[in-house]
Image (cartoon, rainbow, N blue to C red; front, side, top):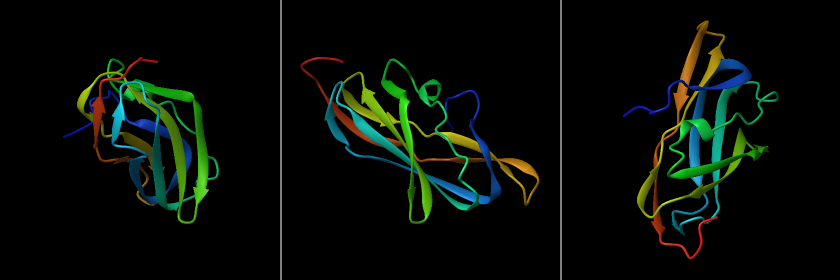
Length: 131
């Protein structure tokens, strides 16, 4: 299954060889409106020093997920560069945070390469207030 977004999200300034992406969430059982941190780790044969958080809000269904692109930040972990976003589910049920696709310049193959994360399940219960 492919991402429903129109185009892959560009990782501007990142070029190199083979890169992988892995996403994770700080919680999988929450209430409507609860904040969750989405972490996307990039690892591989690339220089990530110029990687800045791209906007992700256009890559998800805005009636289901709210992504705060303005609060996104980067972190360097021992083997990768991490992007951290604050997200909130806007409806209840067993939801799936969608697969995200990212593009970068693969200098070894001289092509624009696309990598993707895996979709992640989130169990969202009715909340007292929607933020």
